[in-house]
Amino acid sequence: MKFLVFVIPFIFISLTSRGQSFEPGESYLDENAYVEYLAGNLPIIISVPHGGYLEPDSIPDRDCDDCLYFRDSYTQELSFGLREAIYDKTGCYPHMVINLLHRKKFDANRSIETAADGNPLVENSWQAYHDFIDSAKTAAVEAYGRALFIDMHGHGHDIERIELGYLFTKTELQLSDEELNTTELINETSIKQLISDNIGELTCSELLRGDQSLGSLLHAQGFPSVPSNAIPAPLGEEPYFSGGYNTIQHGSKYGGFVDAVQLEFHSEVRWDESLRLELADSLATTLIQYINMHYNNEFATYFCSLPDLDIENIAANDLVIYPNPSTGIIKLPKHLNGAFSVYNIKGSIVFYRQINGSSKMDISHLEEGIYFICFTNLVGEPTVCKIIKQ
Image 1 (cartoon, one colour):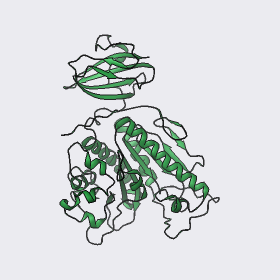
Image 2 (cartoon, helix red, strand yellow):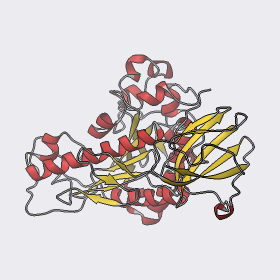
Image 3 (cartoon, one colour):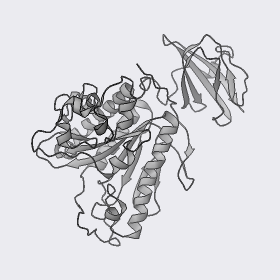
Image 4 (cartoon, helix red, strand yellow):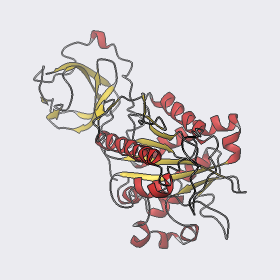
């Protein structure tokens, strides 16, 4: 079985082409105030392209041959609920990018030509939308090595279930597992990287509709989903959304370490407030499970809050490391087997690493200051020391 090692961070990173620094949990707007980015510190990126309300008279309605104008009602509210639920469960923030304009003014799930219909203001916001996503992807990959991008939508289909789009058509989903597992089809999916490298070495078909697939995990939470183990594929002529521009551009079909899924929610779970809150909580649980199962099976253990340790009274020799202070490379006892979590003075985790008898660790990427290094052995017993990074 593979084991993927990631850094679990609470780091402030400058990532955009404009050199802007994003603090997890804070909100940032583009220059037109039509796009909002809520910076995060998890390998989860939420995109909300069609839930906006703003209809400024200064921007004419889009008028193009294949333009769609309906707003995906309550997807913005659902996504904020999801963000809050993830924070409540982890102490960390997902990244979230929101189109605040109504879809008839700006469609953030289309190419710039269709999205903005030639309006320069909207073109600027289109660029900002995708720049924010790219910044979130860069931050997540730098910190964790991998990330999951989810594009939040609403559908009006008669069958009330969640549709998960991986860029496979319903006809392709109706194929056998053996046919789905061919290289030709795998090369077309937005989770191509995950298929090639996941902890359980699951196949494409297993990740789409096996017991540990995203759809099956959601279905187990009480929200019927397709594809899943209960509903492997849409039947016959049943309608189904397979994924759009964002899923193609921000997933791993063309490479990279970010996988993407388009989530289409039926109207009942969006319009009913109590159901919407229940869905947000269940989806948060599901995403955490999914990442823990497939990307990093230590993820659910190491979030962003310092464990309940008396850091004010840590003995200097609880864990012997040297040199201390250090400028970068620290030496460790050679017999250690377990995991290191490094916390800043505020109690936020900035670095995580598994260790198996290694005699050194590099902390040169950390800013100068005081840190607490928590080593947890294989039976879960923590040992802590204070270190000064110079």
